[in-house]
Image (cartoon, rainbow, N blue to C red; front, side):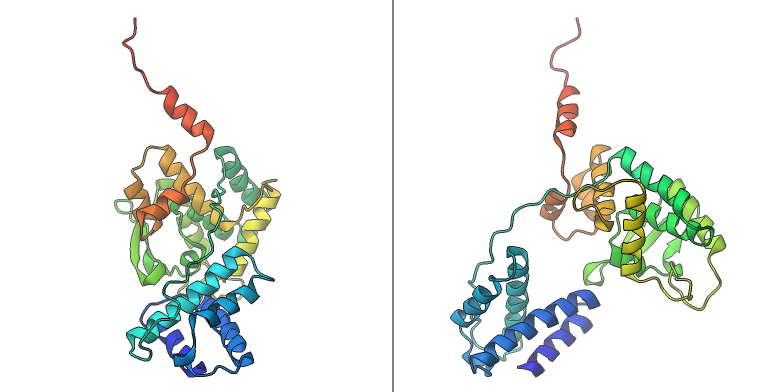
Length: 296
């Protein structure tokens, strides 16, 4: 069983180009599943039944929420789908097991005042050594909507600050590349950082004091620090909220959903629809713009 899981994880890494974080989640979930199977003396993959999976998930439900259960089931389903495609099993025992329904959470994003306060907090709180870097990070997250993993994966050769074609090339989920234009403001701040960026061997755009590529947890920590400094403490506001802010700003400025989908790197338009939340004020402002009668 463990050998099959190792093959599956290699497939995710080499052919599906999944991120290390995602692969770790698969490894963790499948590892727990194997532990459960071994406790019931089931070690042969062809003898695993639908009921085995249900019993495993039922046990997990005692200490885990619906989101975690859904993720574990998704990991198991992907694993068995891979085994079927490789001809290792004839029937998929989990194909018709339904995932628990998850409550739809409204994405958290910053208001104009809040993201202006965030930028001001960076300028006020950052040490001189980190100011240009941290400001460029926050501005790039707000001004492009890229994911945290995409930001730390950016390299110098993927940044184009030519004034006639300012953009960054991002490798998103599934190693799919997309090009995101940069505004004059974003390009200017990024350019200032590049002028002050230490000359090190690492090709990563954002680097640590040690000269290596900045890690995701470091970026997460510094963004949380500046959010706190800006007194932005509402629930579920973190790095991903800056991505939501970019999408919401595009929507409020009249951008087409398909355009937003492309910029955010969503595979399905339905994801973009769920991703962007229009609050009641936005709805009211939209309705107020309607003029049904001719002016007298």
